[in-house]
Image (cartoon, rainbow, N blue to C red; front, side, top):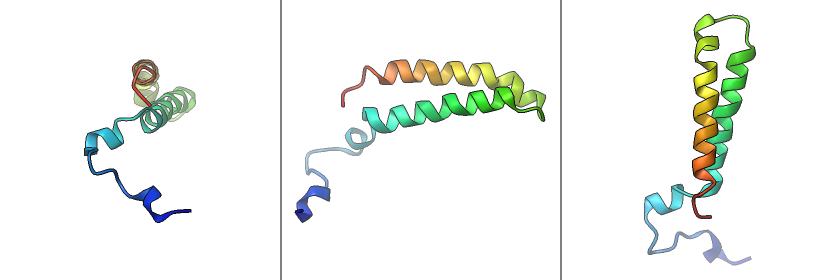
Length: 70
């Protein structure tokens, strides 16, 4: 294993490192899961009210992110 495997590439910007499919898909999946948890919890009507919008936002985000380069 070489030590150069974990050094950042000199020509890549901060946006290129973070705007990749893997991390963004994980964020979208977390938002979808949060929406489902908000839908199933029995304690807060406000969370229940926002659950559909949260799940929809996560789904749209996942659809858009799936078009982003690897």
